[in-house]
Image (cartoon, rainbow, N blue to C red; front, side, top):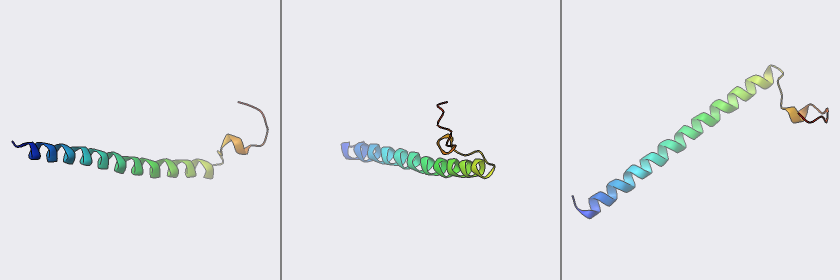
Length: 56
């Protein structure tokens, strides 16, 4: 295996890994936003929106 082939394969594997990680993060982000929207629709909003001024 020549040096160029090894280096190209290494960059390819690294690029594929980073691409898969980015795709997983985007999918997880959409799932988290959907879950948050469902909770807010049930009336479970963010604590900072309660307006009581009390610290948890």
